[in-house]
Length: 415
Ligand code: UDP
Image 1: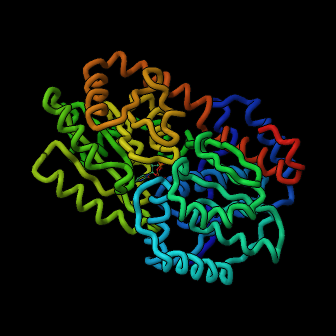
Image 2: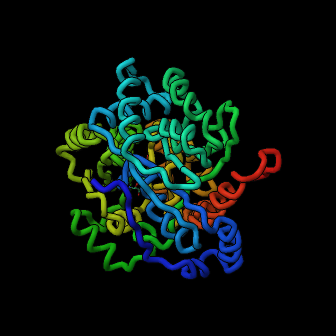
Image 3: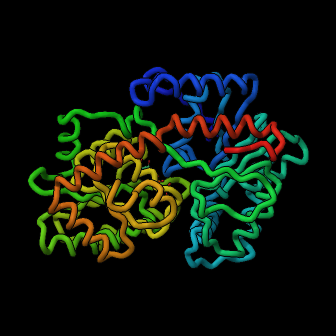
């Protein structure tokens, strides 16, 4: 498989002006000018599925339009390697996992293969998440600036896994975390940068009612009942079974339907098993729609989010939870658990409702379903909150400032 992706954005930079204003774009152009002649090489573990791919797919072409030579490569790994890194992922999120000495050995072996195979051409090498973290070994040979971005909630990580990864992270020039409470004790610079959504992508752009209806019809959804929607990879940390439980509680007093839609990711071998579990649990209840959507279904996801009466995100752990900003940008009322980066997006009772348990989720869902005016107000506030904080233009600015700062001594950085 080709390990470099060539992306072309359908949106032009100037198309963002009506959303974020001219001065924002001028600032981006000015900052980008400082990186002229430099290559930013992103390295992750998959081109499709999950938040990292979602961000890079839109970020890389926009950086290119700003004149920054940004590129994106993925590492290669066997299914066993991705099973190990999925367990690392869960363990870093604080989930109980059995991690064996052989797992670390396999991780190192696959890293070595990628060190041999991958071309390291960037002036700035930007590794995303744990899978490529150990490629930092190359720094001894080639130098350059290296940044590691962690998209996981590492506020309470499994110590064994974090210590192993930390041994690589300390050799980077900088680390990026998504929320203040994920920051770690590290001898290198740390940046706190929120992820973002692209308001003009197929996932988020405005859709006409006809498109929304045709997607609803395709999936057998009815417009006569309020619709609760959770969009997520089929992952236990997204608590799909908890979603069904909460829905069943709501259903006792409000006739509604549930959509649990998601796909699988090539770096997540667990997802098929979880999908089957969820499908079995939902069997026999015609108001629960468990939808397996293929990777390139951005328009359909957009339509499902827009068709929702309330969007739910009942994650047990969450790095940031892009799906929440996606829903808020569509002015949808959101119920979400207060984990990871979610409270940055959902300000309780202002841009949505936070919950802690299945019962809490059911209570909040009932509150919004039975009070559309309140729900609408939360959604409108949420949209403004996303405009101010979580659009790709904010993210571009943070990245450009960070890249520029890598050439500066650390005592003059005030991001
Ligand atoms: N997503 C998607 N198809 C799916 C499931 C999720 O396109 O079947 C998208 C979702 O809309 C969001 C991203 O993948 O843009 C998931 O990011 P998030 O931060 O919510 O969770 P992650 O998967 O990274 O844990």
